[in-house]
Image (cartoon, rainbow, N blue to C red; front, side):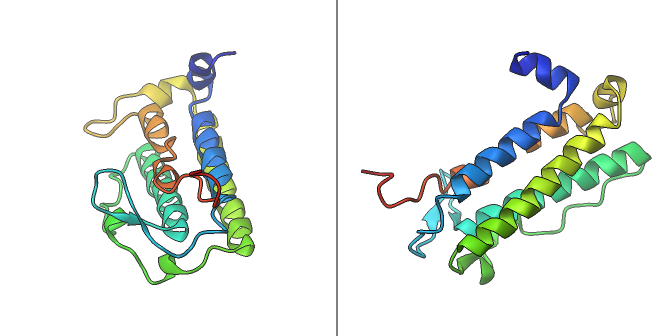
Length: 160
């Protein structure tokens, strides 16, 4: 089964694929030297904790959107600062314990997202929802490891 066939029958699968990529990169962040890195062309900085936080927030935000749309109510307006905000916690060292916590958190969130979509059918995934994206479009949007890719591979020998 190719990717197109897979996402046709299981749009949440790509969310789990993206999470696997985030966690693959996160395994290489425990050697981070503490210097925030600029993101590609958006003027923001990223750290390991910020990349994990933003990816998790993205999953939570869009899972809540899916739930609201399925319930037939308007999604809650976005009120957080997203990638423009760097918290003190974002600047902390990223340890093996942090990696374990991130793995547990992100794996559960992406799996929940996928299972929620699998509980619906293709008619629901593609049903127009006014000015909102379809559920399939939301899944495709969320299935992007962009935040983690801003850091990439931080092992000391990666750039050599």
